[in-house]
Length: 206
Image 1: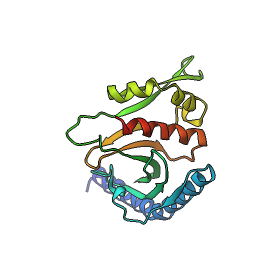
Image 2 (image 1 turned 120 degrees about the vertical axis):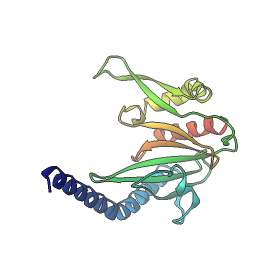
Image 3 (image 1 turned 30 degrees about the vertical axis):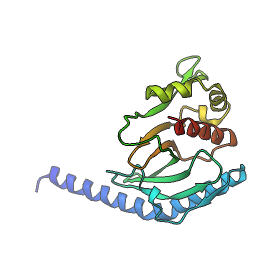
């Protein structure tokens, strides 16, 4: 057997073993993160509670997703955000966690062509400059509404959401009549959560 073939086999086994370990530890770590986020939201005045495992919303945005799994749903009361789905994506390098803030809207249906939207931060200087403004790009109708909401911009610029490392994207899921506000996993300040809830309000009238 050639060395290239042996190397390929060893690499393949290493990758599979790495993914297995990541998936094995994901269940416990994911449950802990869900509980941590739930308790944090309650501390900042958001009425959040854990939903039963197996909720149908766990499947939103999960198509064609090898190594991707919902860690469970958090329900919310009296908010534009309907619920929160904590997502774990496992690879041979470990598991990364993301959050889908789910927004229910009868306007999001399969016969409407809705595009994704993402947030761009603008700095006063390249590289090490400070973030001084934000811009939404993507679907024309929604991005325009978001760009004209100066209260939203103010909350984004005075919270940790202005950090370029805080990725945020809006993804329509017309099959479910939902949209996902996708972010990296982090515990939001009250200002950051209010910004996310304002975004959800715009999505409902999209």
